[in-house]
Length: 391
Image 1 (tube, helix red, strand yellow):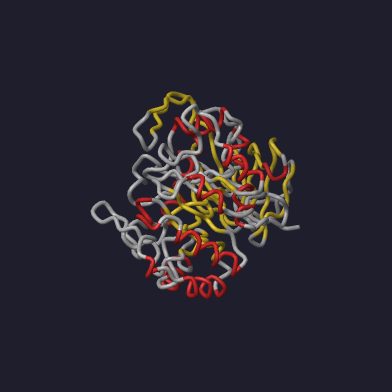
Image 2 (cartoon, rainbow, N blue to C red):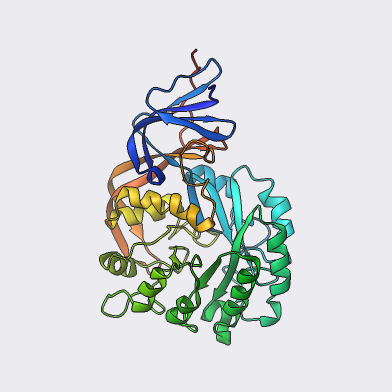
C-alpha cells in the first residue's frame, strides 16, 4: 500500500489500543493506514522524523469556545489548534438555534482544524459573556428554544454532537434547574447526550448530577466550593459516585472559574479521576489561568495522574463521550489525526482559578500535529523537515 505520510520513530502512546512503544504511523487517504516498525515508504511518501517525541491520537478538547466574531468569548480555532496540538475542538454552546447556521457557515466550514459543537438550548447561545457584560442566558426563560434547538440539532448531526445548557447563579440566576430540564427534554427528543455547565448554586451539584442520564456530561466537574464534588472533609460525595456508576461522565472544563487544585487533589485521592480533560478555553482565560489543552493536561500529570491516563482523557475517552469511535485512536482506518508531543522537565508554575499555585516538574509540550492524514503544523519551523520516500 502506498502511504501519503509516515511519522517515523516516535514513541506511540495510544490508549485505545493499550499501546506504548516506538512505532511508525502511516496515513493514506485522510485515514490512519498502518502502525508498526520500519514501515516501507513509497516514492511519493512524505516522511517526518519524530524520533525522541511522543505520538498520540489527535488531541480532542471537549470544551472550547471558538465562535470567533460571533460571540464575545470566541477564540480563533485554527490558531488555538496549531499552537496547542488539538486537532478537534468541540464548541460547547457558544451558538444556539438562532445563530448556529452563521457559526457553521462562517467558522466551522472555513476552519482547517476540525470543529464539532454542542448546541445551546438558549436561542442565541452564550451571547453576553465578556469582561464588562455578564448576562446569564439561562436566566431568561423566554430565550429557551427547545423546539428550534431540536430541529437545528437534527438537521446538523454531522457537526452537532449534543445539547448544552448552563445552570447556576451566574448563568440561570434564580431559575434553578428549569433550563436544565428543558435541555434534557431536547436531548431526549433528538437522542443526543447533554453537557451541563454548573457554577454557584442554585441549583446544587447534587441536584444537577441527580438529573443526568448515562452518557450525559457534567463539565466543570472539579470546580471549587461552593458546588464542589467533594465535601468539607475532602471526600467524594456519594451522589457523584452514584452518577458515575450509572454512566454520567465528568469533564474538567477548566476555564476562568471552574478548576481548583484543592478539589482535584481530593478527587484523585478518592480514586475519582476525570473521564475527560478539557480546557474551556475562551477569550477570558486563554492568557490564564487555563491557557490551553496541554497546560490543563500538564496540571493533572503533575498531580500524579499517569501519562497514559492523561492522554486517554484527551483522546479515546473524549471520542467515546462524542459517540465517535473513529476519533481518538491510531487504529488503522481511524481518523487521520495525530499529535506530536514532548515532556519537558524542570520547574513549571501552574495556577488554578482561585490563584493557588502548583510547582510542577514536568510540562506537556505540543510539538506538531497531523490533520486529516496531512502534516498540519509544527511549533518550531524546520524541526521536522519533510524527507522524501523510497521504493
